[in-house]
Image (cartoon, rainbow, N blue to C red; front, side, top):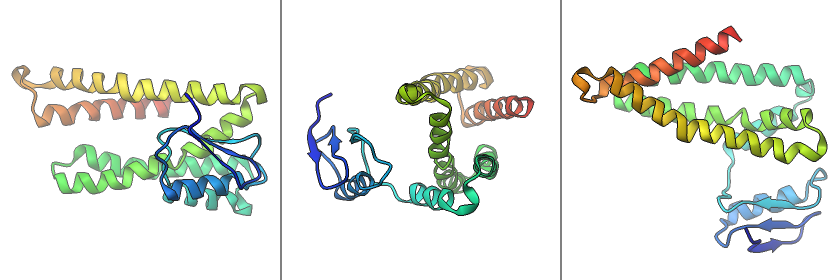
Length: 190
């Protein structure tokens, strides 16, 4: 993938792999390039976009003096995941589309909250020369699971639960219930 533009002005250059970069995303990249921890260059992938909510909140929380302990960071991530479980359960069990939409708007940002700290922990566990590979393999496995395996499994279970093999809303609602119970049960056992 060729570098489309290079942004100078920070401590390190920003290599952008797209021609279409939002002005807000550009400013965030320049800000990151000025940080003392930036090394070599900052890379912006083709899907780069500005983000403020989860990024700012996570950065603010993890920058607090009380968050210097890795144990506290793990407790914070566990707490956010536990709280995010509540709207996901409501979303799965409700018959109200407006309520499901509201729960989805709460659930999606909260599940992205822990990604940054998880990659931070992952980078601390990996040898320096292997950090990018660890993150790439983790993202690959997560995307294969979430974008390839999970939809097929939901569709298979929905067909299995459909009365008379005619898919309906009830059978489609039952499939994620089964999967969330299974993953929750496995998490509790671990």
